[in-house]
Amino acid sequence: LNNYLMKKTVLITGAAGFLGSHLCDYFLSKNYKVLGIDNFITGSPKNLSHLTANSDFEFREVDITHDLKIHDSIDYILHFASPASPIDYLQIPLETLRVGSLGTENILKIALRNKARILIASTSEVYGDPLEHPQKEEYCGNVDPVGPRGVYDEAKRFQEALTTAYHTYHGLDIRIARIFNTYGSRMRVNDGRAIPAFMGQVLRNESLTVFGDGSQTRSFCYIDDMIVGIYKLLNSNYTKPMNLGNPDEISLIDFANEIVALAGNNNKIIYKPLPINDPVKRKPDITKAMNILNWKPIVSRKKGLKKTFNYFRSLSLEELKKKEHKFA
Ligand code: NAD
Image (cartoon, rainbow, N blue to C red; front, side, top):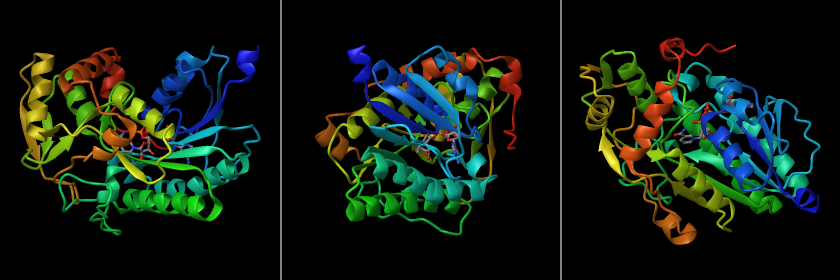
């Protein structure tokens, strides 16, 4: 009983999403009590269904942009609520701006009231289409505020500014994770990102769609590595933004070929025009994370892709065929 009473409580926003649900699992495995909140706008109850019998886990359906009534005592907050893939935030631009601004301030107020340490999920998108390569935390980015991705990029930049102001003005204990592309189980097959898109196409026996000539690069981090990085950042005392990601860079065309090989099919690759503002290059400089957190990704792309492929393969054909996410 004593042990139970001493457990720390972590509030996770965006708990029903890809990263959020993995964070719930990880913090429960580390003996925390987890209070997950989400409004399911891009997440799914299915991602948390395995936790219903866990007495250390509680879930509440809440939209964090509305007035939040969280009266529980909270020790830590992981703020991950936000649409995260272009296919989502282009369809729900206002919700995206609001969750990064109003929603973030609501959560910061809860942190302040509880004197809780808060880690916010920022993104490599704050660098926009970067003119420096790889991207260090000091690089201020190349973002078009009124471009199609502006709604997400600027919401996240504002979120960093607001969180930092709560730190400097109110003394709030903050952590800022600049997360680069992450992949793994529970991504939506239809979320428009390269890995679920390629895997869905392979499993439906369709051609793979590559945008542009496929020479644009990405650096993909496996979910288990990312979760450990987030945990270590939370437990550090570093309050400035920190890059978390895998610097192992690959062109999209090579990547598509790797997934075709993994599936053992002979799918064709077709090319479509590159969307506006699609970044040409992305690669984190993770020197800070390596030095300060003693962290770096350890799961090879081969291993991570195989595990992720097994997840997508376990989905029903009906799920694999869902091409559009319908917003309420
Ligand atoms: P996701 O869409 O799977 O998860 C986001 C969750 O937030 C969803 O469950 C959604 O329903 C919830 N949400 C959105 N608005 C909300 C609101 N107003 N109230 C309550 N819940 C709300 O996306 P993800 O990939 O898991 O991303 C999670 C976080 O990590 C986001 O903040 C994203 O910006 C950040 N991030 C992710 C990546 C990545 O590669 N996946 C990269 C950089 C940053």
